[in-house]
Length: 307
Image 1 (spheres, rainbow, N blue to C red):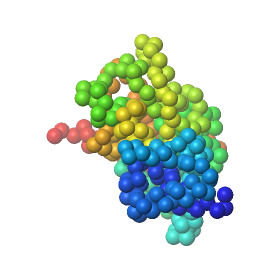
Image 2: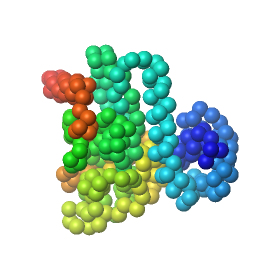
Image 3: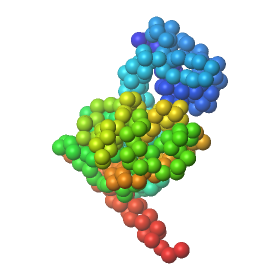
Image 4: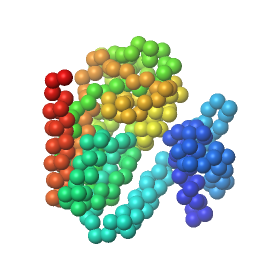
């Protein structure tokens, strides 16, 4: 294991999300040939093919998918350690608040982070957490808090702030027959393969993300798990899967090969929450909740102004 280079792992994780050598090269700031070299080198070290390549498609092999699932948490932990060291070196004695998030962070949230640093002299350290592991990093103390999708029914966790509920949309490939309709009905989920978050989340949280049955009792197929939003969008664009997302994510993750459709008959909305361990509440977390409450209250007031 000591012979495996971090750059090779980073390249494989990026390729697992993009499933495209060109986009991976652009994301890493290197050439496509360098991406191929890094993947080939890692495959030689591991001793098995990790990526299946054809002229039309790039996908992880069975061994590659398992390797990515196992190595991603270790890489994330290593990256967090490096970030913490960098933050300490730059900010000296500033107190730190380690916050995890899924996918992307609202502008109102980043503004609250900025104000917390200015008012409370708290250095924010942000880390992306796997979609299917919303609570683990907070429960084991690696993070002080996390912005995750609700519901949260863990006795050891507190929901300090609940963000405004958002409409849920269905992400489909632009080439999918349903994409042209503009909207779908919740019963249409029974004819799709809907991606689910992969991880150690409790069952009630998984069902809230992807229902097992439609309101009429028809089973909803969900054969594939994902660890990141970008991984999910890449699979959706290939045309074999669908994904349920919230409207803010859809507005921030526009792609020409993916369409976001409204869902008639779906009553459940998406809602995020700021959570932390109940026994580790701090004045800084309480201050962050106040800033978030002020930010979203101000936004609602602006929306209600006459045009």
